Length: 121
Image 1 (cartoon, rainbow, N blue to C red):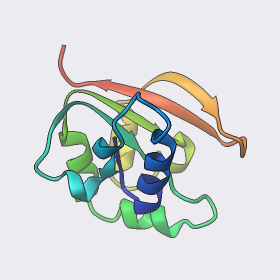
Image 2 (image 1 turned 120 degrees about the horizontal axis):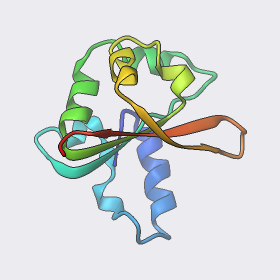
Image 3 (image 1 turned 135 degrees about the vertical axis):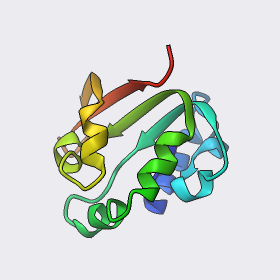
């Protein structure tokens, strides 16, 4: 499970402490994942809707997205607010390849969509 942001990493680890679904030690920022691979990668975009600077920072260069996507050997799941990320530089390319598989709302009623990219058959 990868995210561009340390604050999202921390929140994910806190939520996963009570769960056995994903080992919290397999949650990290994209930067910490360089050189590692996994069959399945869940890429959690996150970002504060009131602070657009995070989106600008994450999409400033292709490196962050490239590292996140290239860690997955079989499947890449992307969780995030499509409407917020689809027009960001480099992420707009990712958006063209996403297949929506589920939609859910968090307590703040922001709709998030789970997407899947199958990298291999």
